[in-house]
Length: 238
Image (tube, rainbow, N blue to C red; front, side):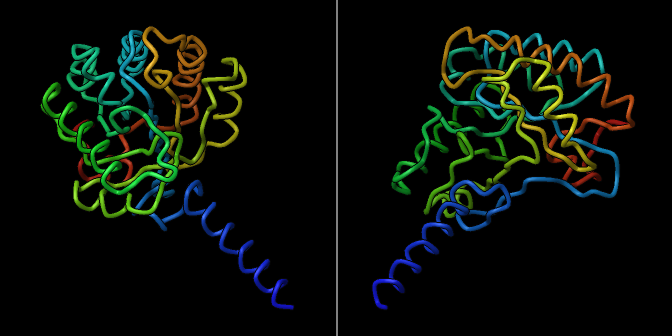
């Protein structure tokens, strides 16, 4: 009987831990959001892992459709491509913290997590002049200690409503995956980089965005930054 009880308790604990680490709506390891209010037709398009050499292609598409987005940038990539990081900011998009070197935080100490987030804050702030208030964990992995670090740095965690899996799927499947899942207030996760890889191949992402922007706008959706989506009154654009 005792063995059965212990086994059940272990399974429950493992389930709770798994949800805390990867569950998109989990608050266990830090305050986090995964969608905005559903009372109006607005979406937040977000890009992880940049900036990269191909980020300008996405900026051009966003500008063409007068769409704003949030770019969760890695400190290493910001230092490698400072002008592109500045171009994102000067185009009136929002920049979020995506850690310095894109590690997964499994079994990492709070000090390690702090240094990763702080170094990214410093890099983004020094290069662009903007200090992020949003954070997305690499691969969506949260860990004990992260919540305290977020509080120290004034960062709100951001997960996603739908993730396009654009690092592995072709553009038509990314397009379909996103289109089927969007609702008012959705946060869409795509990637303008591939971790820290120089000159990454993001053609699937670019093509999916090329198709998604006009289609979703035709359906009446407005593209906003994550901060605008969560707090509409801060919007600076009519």
